Image (tube, rainbow, N blue to C red; front, side):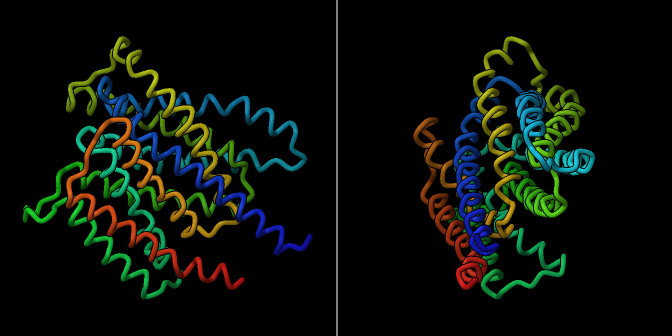
Length: 309
């Protein structure tokens, strides 16, 4: 089998893993919204990341014993710590926004990382096409309809700003993982390490933000009530999906990877409608379609280049 054929098969397989990632992430918005009816955003993050990290420990032991060439353990832990700090910042801004924002809106604004990944690439010396810049402008139009609408109120809600910050940090997370994958790391070790790191970072903010700001100090009875949502978010969205992301991004262009994962925005809107009965206003629906069009346009150059190879 030639190297090109092998790489092509790896790309197809890993693209499918990223698609599974987007589906799990999209439905996890429902779990996040449901869980925070009982506990604060940072409490939610601490528990779900501990669950996700712990779930992967036996997987790591099993895979490293069976592998003839496991990734460098120390390097994997090092990158995992870096990923965890970035993940904690991104996900907690998203968690705080979910106290006010619908799952559909949260999913689509978060998906702006699809635009930001190639834009940040410019700062790293990567070339980008005029189509990307058009996509950025189109995404801004979509954001206007999604967050402001035709009512003329030219102010973002605090949750919209939090989601924009979350999107920016998630784009950095994608690029950081792409860099880690070039160093021969163990993806599952990176994933587990990032969850424990994110849990520790989140724990520092439980008292000042959950307790003092939101008046949602952890309570064992409320944690038990939120446990089904925590289990889905911890085991599936963290333990499974983030691991699939790290593994799936290998042999896949980071911009193409971000397109596939941005489908979580569509899944989040559909799952919010079907499960939580959340309805988007007309302007918000227009904004969703415009932003998704921007997402697709942003990926055309990479997709066309891949087809030529």
